[in-house]
Image (cartoon, rainbow, N blue to C red; front, side, top):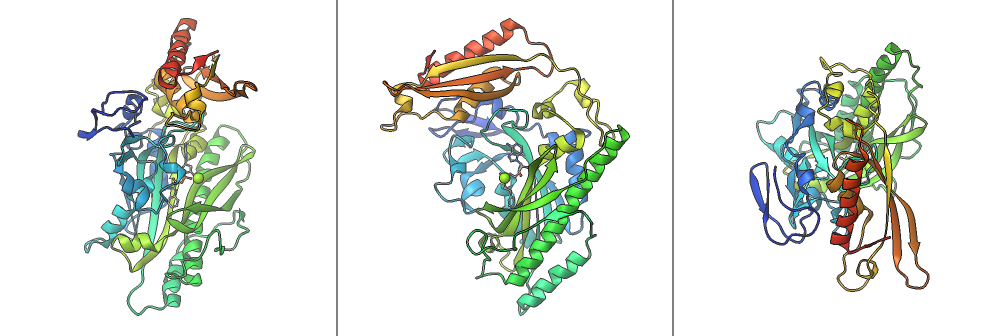
Length: 448
Ligand code: FA5
Ligand code: MG
């Protein structure tokens, strides 16, 4: 993957990704450093922690019921990523501040759900014997910079469908799902799940398409599978902690109501970890319109999507998301033979904080008249482009509006730290100066 420009809108030119060339336009904001991550396919590199995590999850969704897949090329259409899934036109996820556009109609996928329709269509083919799938892939989002956020991360999506044959009643349809649930193991972990399966406003039954008992059965099957997945992951992680002599807290998990445009009802699963609830996945009962539009109108079912890094960070106790991209042998050599081990941190190199304070230009602050607004993610992108992987986090530490002029001032604190070497003052100063200059060039700010 190669390309041209950095941040600004480029109205002419092209971007080549995975051998295919796309014209750029005013929407283009995919940068060269982002595109340089395409085709690394960490989830396919044997002994990489993301590969080991993927394999562990796939083993919970085995054949012949489930096919296990990966999707190499992250370039999808806005139709695949948003429209087909029912994202409204004004959904914030569509914004250029959140999503990397190749051009107006083409994006780097922001989630593995962009492939749902293709996989449903595949199940509709006559020779298909699978009723479900998992798919792992790299996904791209403009986002904060800190130890758990990176603009490229990995998701794994899963789905399971059941056929309603002609003449089958809703009770018979639900009964076959309850039968499948009985085949799954039970567990004795306490799960918080205080809410009814459907909620009239927030998580309605798709009453044109489903009966309440069908949805109860789908929800029960979905939840049991994902609870078993998390229990499996935590039992693997606790074997590792025990071996290294650390005591693990008993597993606590809970279901919370959620919203996705393509499922109803929807939930998120949270795990209590290091003193806080951590969201590990989103899921729900697939909107029937999607199945109807994808050649499988006679099927109903569930889908989920999880973050592979989130799970791998728990499993291996990996403290910084940048490490997944490391080519450092001190990192890579720790993972062997598909085994889950506790990551032994190598000595941390010193950090170096630098602040940058600036006045937004009146053009960037005024609401009226075609000016470019300044978004937190624009700051993140500038720092990413200039500092590459020698930045650990970026925080807005001060925000101030001048009482007389109405001008707005922002101050960001950038924490520079390399995972691989001690940064010299000179090195950091060069990068920091580049950040300051880029802010001036792209956004017309006045450095304070
Ligand atoms: C989604 O992306 C939905 N497509 C999930 C889904 C699939 C719902 C199928 C229903 C049916 P969300 O944006 O919450 O949802 O991301 C899903 C998971 O990806 C999160 O629970 C989290 O584990 C992981 N994730 C999200 N953002 C990040 C990030 N910036 N860094 C690391 N992991 C992330
Ligand atoms: Mg979420």
